[in-house]
Length: 383
Image 1: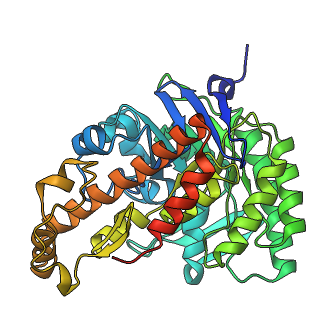
Image 2 (image 1 turned 90 degrees about the vertical axis):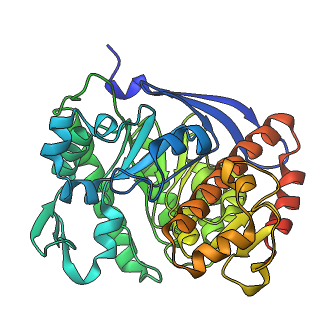
């Protein structure tokens, strides 16, 4: 009988002749994920400001992201278990990926203590103390019930001392072995399978990234992730590390670059061989009035949009793009009206989904590189 992880299937459908971009297809028990893919972030069982119906019908992602740290603290795993898992709790019948909480614990630097056994941390909600280990994080993710679950790792800060990065990477590898051993003992809960991805670390040191990528590749899981980037390093360093790692990670498995990034970052990393992305940027920036478009970014709070009655985005990717004008959206932000944030969020997520799907079309058509260079130039503009 195949291992549970064998139930996730990845088909590599097309490779670009002029870059390392690829188009593929991941199949899980909750359906097909066409890659390259962007995963909207639904930290606490909700993509901020968006109804599940809008998410499904307008933005239409094959997969979204949930967060282990946040869901563990609230609503707590026993509630999720009573609900029958995260899919049922939030009424989402497509794929979900959960990260392991390693990044959130990293971002609590003043309120956590890392040691070999695991990480003691203080809840940002009520100050209570908790302890994450590779083992209990696997159990928590089994209970949450996502389709793809992540290894527990330590995400190093930037800049990071070489010796610290090396020590941390080796501990992440030891934690990975503990995750894999423990997962075998903890059955899935809701009648569908879970795929497990380990995470490459090593900060911005090429030799460490190579060692980590080798270790992760040798663990022979169904997919692999690249962590510890997009934490403040220059984009060039991110691209350099991604390239090094993608050259080592197996070609027949999906590659997930965690927490990245701007539309330009996404296209550049697709060109280096990455298949999966997630980032809070489209939703967070939307709530601050920044809209991403194919022609550049718009700060809708600027006075220049005050009497601009043209549609939000002529491309009309989602209903908000043609139903509302720039002047109206600017007014909503000026009046601090919630609807403004919701409109901007739907627009940005719709644009991100359009971008990765368009990238996929161009990879399949064979002209991805030319299209990508044109798009990077256009999207660099501030409108």
